[in-house]
Length: 307
Image (cartoon, rainbow, N blue to C red; front, top):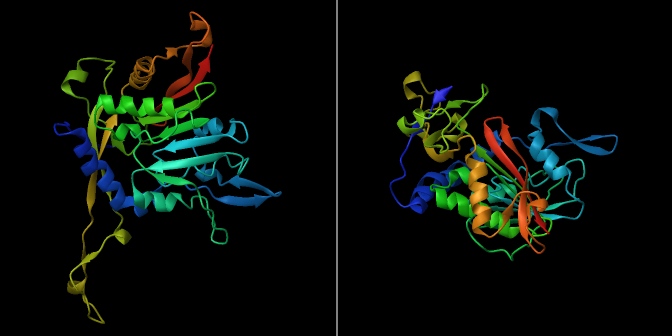
């Protein structure tokens, strides 16, 4: 595994994100999308199924598959829209609207899950995960997969979770959040450095701010110089520059996502815990259904309730 570079966010977090997140993903959108798993339909006994090598992570797939038919949801930070076609075992039974800041990624997400002979158009919206463009409680569910870790301050990450809490139904709304973890597994291409402060603590509560490089593939690069010879010699071979773009990530420490979620909910006046924790009727809260670590990510699943 290659170590990534630690970084200190010293400027305005919005400016930092504009330079090292939004601008980067607009540049690498096509290449980035080509490296993500894609939902591919294969006809077998008249049912759609997913190529086994390209299935989404089980917890995400199960979360979406278990939702009631007819529910409408939000994919906040949809990227190339790879989760918009799910669940594949019940195609068309849910409507997930994708939100993203990158227009170039949204152009790809708009047709996620399409086949050469069958063009599918998805519902996508250009916007910011920190925006408040939805009516409160407009959605039945929301997912945020590998997005909140791109926000460059604690308060902005907390606000992103609050926007999810506000976007879904206060009665039955469900949410699933994934972020990259400091603890990377053996299949990861990267190792995360530990700061001197966190190095003194065997179980740090604050993660690491890092740059994770994105290296463009050769076929995505432009040759340098003009090569017009019909029989180029070795000397005439064009020099291909391989751009490398640094993407900002906050790599979450163990327990950090859960604590951030609790803080976000409590600031909205929500009780955190099962409905039985409510002191009287008329309380609103969220239950942490499950939380944990999967494939170099931390996740938390939440459910709204009213007593």
